[in-house]
Image 1 (cartoon, one colour):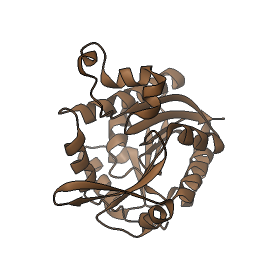
Image 2 (cartoon, helix red, strand yellow):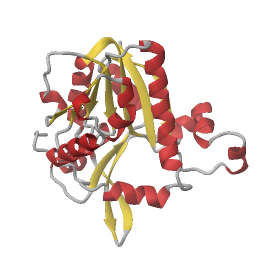
Image 3 (tube, rainbow, N blue to C red):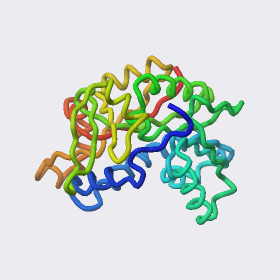
Image 4 (cartoon, rainbow, N blue to C red):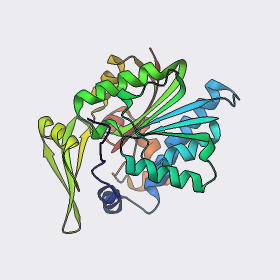
Length: 263
């Protein structure tokens, strides 16, 4: 991949249509994500105390949505994004919120970023599923190199009961998800527009990948669970239920979240 990379779902039309189609109830998608953001916030507070000099690297941070949500924890944030259009949109939006002085905006791939420093926290949100398989290894190696000893990494990506690859597109106002082979997925990550190549990770495969690249996983959580548990949800939140039962956690949840530290 090159630093002239263009994210294929430029306006997030495919992702937003998928959410609109599958969201089990209004507001669930954002609520489910907010739980894992709170888990990351709590972990940082517990393990880094009340420090006010913390640094954050947001790898492939897109338009900076999650960096902004977490910005109060950090004195300096580097938003690393290879798609220049999305980076410029992030810079304008963040400046409009009066947060521009806290942020640095860098238009590079992670593997080409050599800042000469390490970071307290690194956020890697929904990047792994959209890049070629060999690039995911390079990205995780870079993430490990740039994370301080004792630092915290957060990996958010797709999840399924087993690893597979798809291409998503909108046809006749419907999201079409077509299974594909890895070779085609790798190719589409470089050369496609108006369709989204996605790699879904089986839990064991993702945990093994993180381990191979120098990480211990301290927290693993699945979210965006589409299955309906009926009356049980009167007593326990859907995501809580799924994550409380190992066989459900392995098989359900469209997305997952891992807090990692250096091994």
